Amino acid sequence: MKIWSHFHHPKAALALLRATLAILLLFHGWAKIRHGIGGIESMVSATGLPGWLAYGVYIGEVVAPLLLLVGLWVVPAALVVAGNMLVAFVLVHTSQVLQLNSSGGWMLELQAFFFVCALVVAMSHSPGK
Image 1 (cartoon, rainbow, N blue to C red):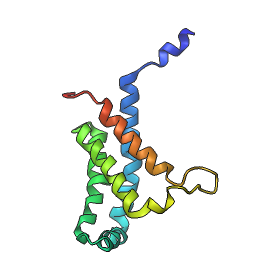
Image 2 (image 1 turned 90 degrees about the vertical axis):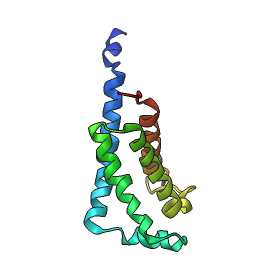
Image 3 (image 1 turned 60 degrees about the vertical axis):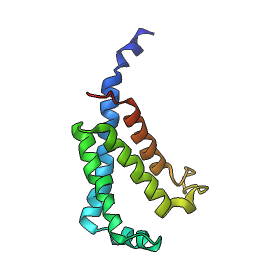
Image 4 (image 1 turned 120 degrees about the vertical axis):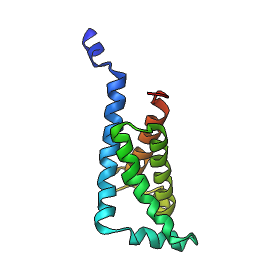
């Protein structure tokens, strides 16, 4: 059917994905701004790393999403988001890899979705644009 051809707007689709990823991550960043990162700092310290590394969460959940939202340094910002999700997985979620939530979904579906969306944004952004 020809009607479906009206929905083919790859650039708009990528912009929508990029903005959605940014906005949803900013909610997490805002929570860190409001309530602090003491828990993350404790987890980082428990691994033997310096606690100040926990402040990197502000880069992954505030700075990078803001860059994505305004369309600056999109590929590096998206890769920072993907890296942030990997760190979150290692620090917090490794025990949940094989768990399902109460509605039957994968316990890590949100983290996986953020990670994959960040990779898609990074892989699909045209250099120099």
